[in-house]
Length: 88
Image 1 (cartoon, rainbow, N blue to C red):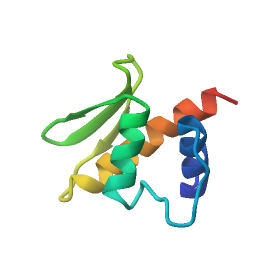
Image 2 (cartoon, rainbow, N blue to C red):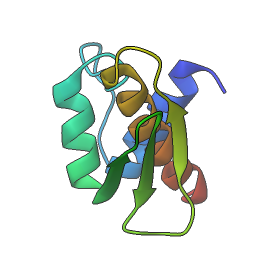
Image 3 (cartoon, rainbow, N blue to C red):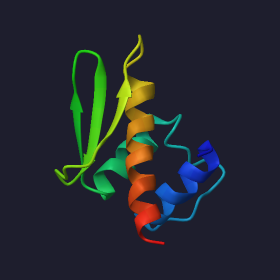
Image 4 (cartoon, rainbow, N blue to C red):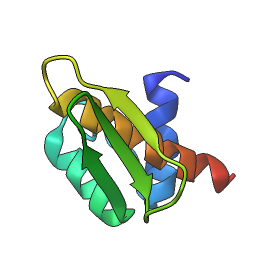
C-alpha cells in the first residue's frame, strides 16, 4: 500500500479531511493527534514499536533501526489505516 493510500485510510478512520500540510508519517504532532483520536496503544520495545487499537489483539509493528520516531509514526498510520479500511 502506498503512503498516500495509508494517509487516506488513516484520515477516514479519524474522520478528518486530508489537507496538504497533514502528514502523520513525517510530523510527530499529526501522528500523536491521530493516535490520541483513535485511542491507540503504543508499546516501545528494544528493537520495535507495536501499535494497537484500544488494546486489541491485532497490532502493527515496525522495527527500530536508529531513529525510533519514524517507525512509531509509521506504525500509528498503519494501524489507523487498518481501522479506516475496516470502515469501507
